Image 1 (tube, one colour):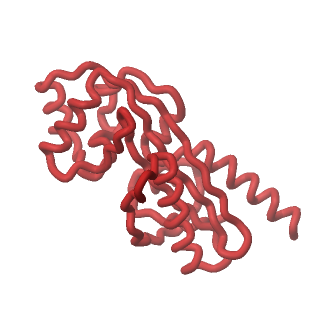
Image 2 (cartoon, one colour):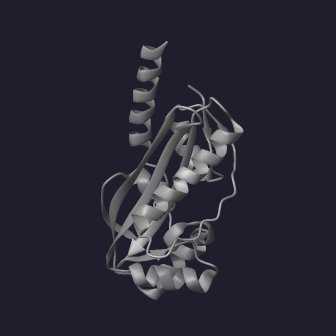
Length: 192
């Protein structure tokens, strides 16, 4: 089954390709602003569903995958930093503490399918000093990453431990996606 990935994320492309899932790209533009009172779990699910729905309208009959990832520390959403100073401030805030990474995922086909779920992974950072933090920032581009870090890019410098799926921290709980795709293919075979 070849799916449509409604995302421009290179990390999601890498995860799908590594899992052997064939896909075509369709970057969709949606308003990613949070609604009043919306928690992170609700926001990532709503955004993932909007992305998948937008792609499903463009590709009738094709299975479309939308996803959105956020970092949450003390109930505050840490999105992508606007500049290096904000990236440094985010990482200092996470230093020596635990936080959650939420990814909302949606698989949709225009006429007959709409799955939406979210995955959570708990991440604990090492206690970082300013020199170590700046050394990390010299190695990666934090500006396109929620929470200003990437577990797959020198994450060992920052992360003490994780509880949950590592792939979720990268940007897509690929193990869960694979399970859902197998269920969808099995159901499709029963219908034909």
